[in-house]
Image 1 (cartoon, helix red, strand yellow):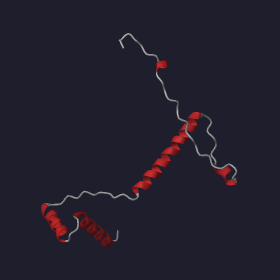
Image 2: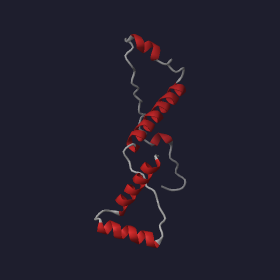
Image 3: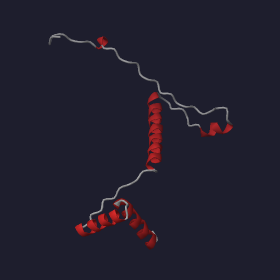
Image 4: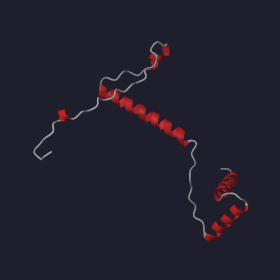
Amino acid sequence: MSGKEQLSLDEFVTAPKKKVAVDVPDACAPEADARLPEPPANKAEADISIRQEARKALRRVKRERVKGESFFVNVSLDRRTKRRLKLASFNAETSMQAIIEAAIVKYLDEIGA
């Protein structure tokens, strides 16, 4: 294609926009009428409400996923303490992490935290 040739928008094929499906609660239930929010006045308000609901759902999913995760703490140790910890983990045939976790739990139990 040379620099003089121009493409028009009609030459490009575009996909149609996806329609967003919204779950509607059963309108026959008597308590459903009291819980139903008023329908949005225009399309922009409908889009905003859908986005807000999607954000809330995403936050709930992230919260559920985080509940079972481990969290990491970095600790600065001097050489002597690190060597002692490494030797203790070798002698006890356990990991340094397990020893540190047990020590933290024991300390927190002792101070009542």
